[in-house]
Length: 127
Image (cartoon, rainbow, N blue to C red; front, side, top):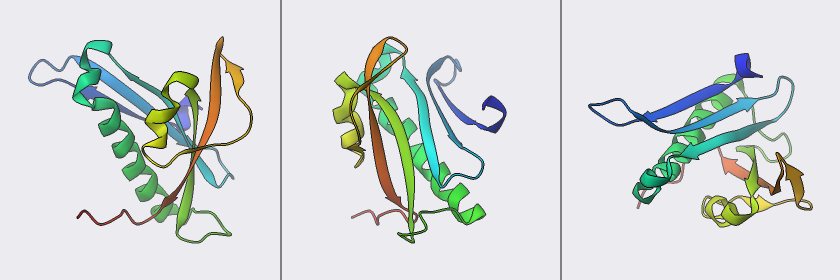
């Protein structure tokens, strides 16, 4: 999977100290993308860097889906993005429009919830 993943690393300037990261990928032959490994150092979370990383990943998903003609076959103009959210941060993903799907499950020793976003390929206009 690593050779098929796209990583974004958020660094402070001018020091270039890394403070956050996110990874996204699309399984070959599948019609959805997966958001994984979102992490921001605790002392930098108050600056909403997690939000900025998710928004950048969503931009990448749109660009990639449009370039490769991806999207949900039954709902043209949409692409699905899946995340496995730790239970305490489900609300973070909900702010982007992600909705819970299925039961909670254990992943890496912590309870998680599958979250899915049916994202328009064209971003919403900024008011």
